[in-house]
Image 1 (cartoon, helix red, strand yellow):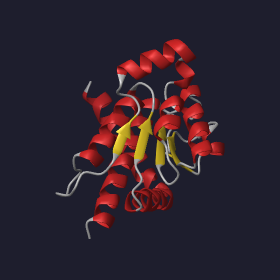
Image 2: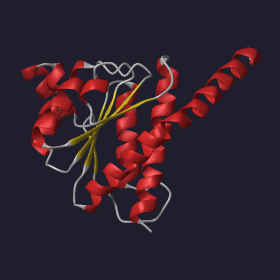
Image 3: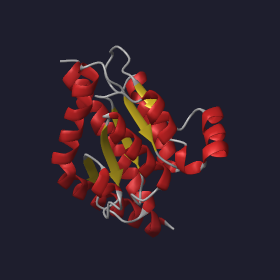
Image 4: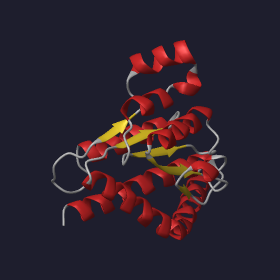
Length: 188
């Protein structure tokens, strides 16, 4: 059992080292988010399953704080309103649970951070489509392949793994990096 634990930790460490190759894209994403927030925009997050939890986590880091005492920043997880999710899912289909919210709340200059380990989640892709129609910038977080999201996001950060648990670990790390970089830019 201890060997399995060590192997897991080594694999995670190797992935995080390779995540450094995404530094230019992460820095660019931080610039996009910072510019949006400076201009009065908001950051919306969406994803399914573990990515939904990550969406909520990252929105909370903006609305609360990440590391610095500061004014709250407008972050919005599109995964939290169960009435909206179930009403839209029932009336329009699960593929539309995020896109309807983006259409309702998205404004030009806002940012959508779309999380999908495969890059192929239908409801996330529809949210991206709605964002583009509204003039909302789209930052995608995917696994190494990028899926369909690699073609439709303004910026797609493809973390260096094809294994869902490792992708999710790196997505939250990328999210934390974004929050830290944004705080540094806005609080300096």
